[in-house]
Image 1 (cartoon, rainbow, N blue to C red):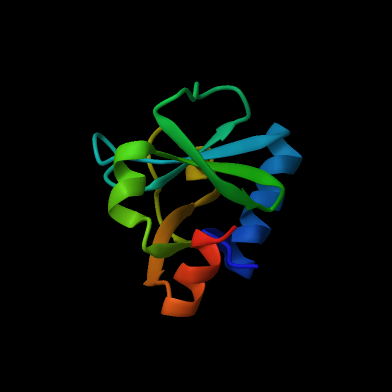
Image 2 (image 1 turned 90 degrees about the horizontal axis):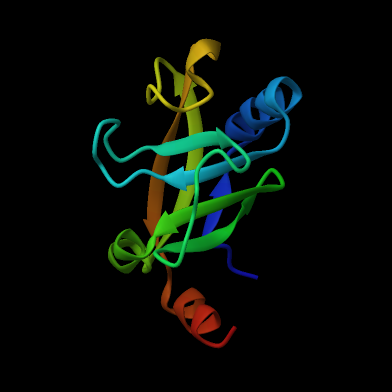
Length: 119
């Protein structure tokens, strides 16, 4: 099954650390305002999603959302969430850990696009 969003092992370790500190989490792919275009990590329920958001999938048992507008730009790509050293978005939970989540992407193959269209 093709995943629209997935996480690297490094990102999954950071998610696990944050779950142990904060409890259940959620992600929302930032649209570019104050924190650039970053995956933002919140305690589950702290960020209100609505009809203008798309649930792409889950990473580390954590829901990952993106706005419909951004989804339209990125729907042809798989989002790969990674973790690197540095300061993340000022509202995202990983900041105090000295890490930040980043989004990498790759274009779906024609076979993957076909599978997604038929799922």
